[in-house]
Image 1 (cartoon, rainbow, N blue to C red):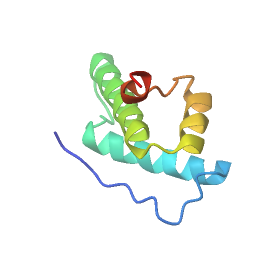
Image 2 (cartoon, rainbow, N blue to C red; image 1 turned 120 degrees about the vertical axis):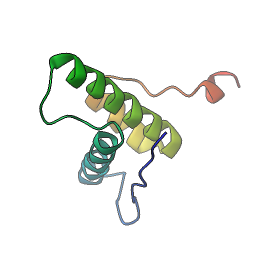
Image 3 (cartoon, one colour; image 1 turned 45 degrees about the vertical axis):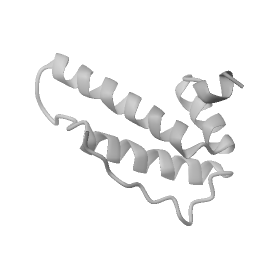
Image 4 (cartoon, one colour; image 1 turned 180 degrees about the horizontal axis):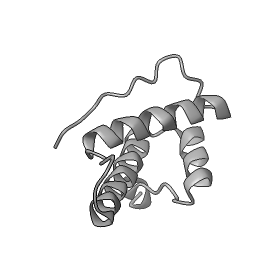
Length: 88
């Protein structure tokens, strides 16, 4: 699987502007990894969009930052649950 490093240094994730900036960076990186098509059929775009959403979600889990996780859940409507925490 391809990966892209997303820099977070200097971003204040406790502030909305910082969270928006990181989300923008994550989305751009996910589109690169998922090869988001600029043109093409709807099925290809839908598959790529699903890949982008899942890639961002995994990045949010890996980041493990409570304030950003809450912001992400509020923005996307997708709660951030980590199976490792649920088993404790």
